[in-house]
Amino acid sequence: MVDVLWARRGLQVAPPVGSDLSRRAAGEINDTSGRRDAAPVRKSFVRADEPEALAPALALYRGGRSGVVPIKLYLALLWRCASHPYATSKPARAWATLLDLDDPEGRGARRVREALKRLEADQLVQLTHRQGHSPLVTLLREDGSGRPYQPPADAYAKAVAARRSKAVINSHRYFKVNSDLWLGGEIQALTGPALVMLLFVLAEQGGEGRPVWFSTTVFADRYGISPATRTKGVRELADRGLVDVEKESLPPHEGAEVFGRRRIRHRYPHSAAGDGVDNLLNRAGGDDATAADHQELVGGLRHLAHQV
Image 1: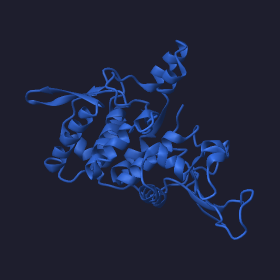
Image 2 (image 1 turned 180 degrees about the horizontal axis):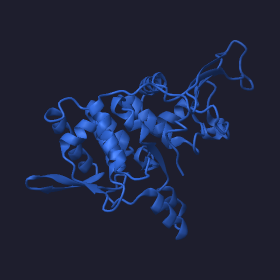
Image 3 (image 1 turned 90 degrees about the horizontal axis):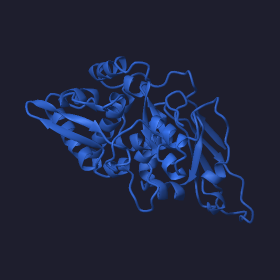
Image 4 (image 1 turned 135 degrees about the horizontal axis):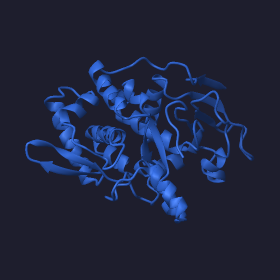
């Protein structure tokens, strides 16, 4: 039993969404970013390696509907602040326009200011208030440590050259959020579940376009979101053509009962030209994955993201 929904590379996904004004704002950022066509994001923004710890993105998301704006705003800041000193003083109304918030001159601008306060409280940005002017927003590290920001590619290369520890090197591993997601209005339109699932997908790719899968128990332990949130988010991404969905039966494991429940694997590969499925059982939790687990393969967008 196999059901497949492909969003192949080169095939147009859903038409542009959101307002023309929002996409125009995205175009202004894109036009001033030189040859940079994507924003690098450290994996530590969406995945905490310490047990019981919450990654910054999840901590923001658990703030409810109000947590979605800070996540999108931080992604926008990472896109905009591409060079030293990694800071910007654009007004709140401009960010509200980019994020396609209602009433960008009024209520939307207030939501942006509230989001900036939340990002500052979570040590993701530093705000320098200036009388009569918009605050200067300076990026801090994606892990919420409060350390100064440095592009992850530069930090990664320096750590490798200096033969730093594996932990230090891994702390600079990153994925990329392509500008096309902003230019087409996709990020602006995504709900909270879809946004966090997109970030989880991109962070877990083993390379450009490589699929990744987890057992549901491993996924819950790593990211701490409910099955309902995961399902809702993946469904929205699939509806917009941002992930592929494939369902297939798994062969029964050794010792399985004839009348026992048959395992189903939901696969979300995104590229028809992908590199294949390698070492997926290990990534899914190895032999510890139980027969009752629905094992999931999650893929990002080959043409919209890649990582080191």
